[in-house]
Image (cartoon, rainbow, N blue to C red):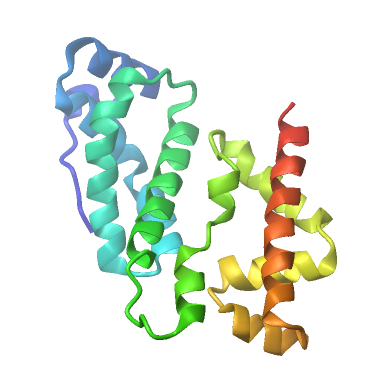
Length: 193
């Protein structure tokens, strides 16, 4: 696991104070101190999404690099929640980036699997509460849409596998997923306003 060294002089400062110091001075040790406090959380988020320890460690460093730019230009309310969303979105983008290069060009279903959008393409998760809202909205979907979305996005099953499990045509599964994504987006928009 990657570690940043803790500077004793900054250990007593609040998150907001460290962030303000970094934004004012641009000195990396302020941001490093702040990031160290939440590195375990960031690593956990990355490991949960990427499912690979080495990829998660790389992501932790990539997120820090992205943080050095975004922390200076974005208005940050609660740093922990903002960092959680940043880490989650970074890892989802990493997954998408790697899945866009399929290894089997002869299987059309694989192409469809890699080209498919994720719920995050339709739904922007910008607040810590958005993940909870998304989970609540998922429970409001019709059973076949919910089942298809969970299998496709959370369990990484193919259209064909889901179709066999449900006893449905592959085209129906695509329809359930597309309609489910739309319904999730609409539900999230209602809950956000």
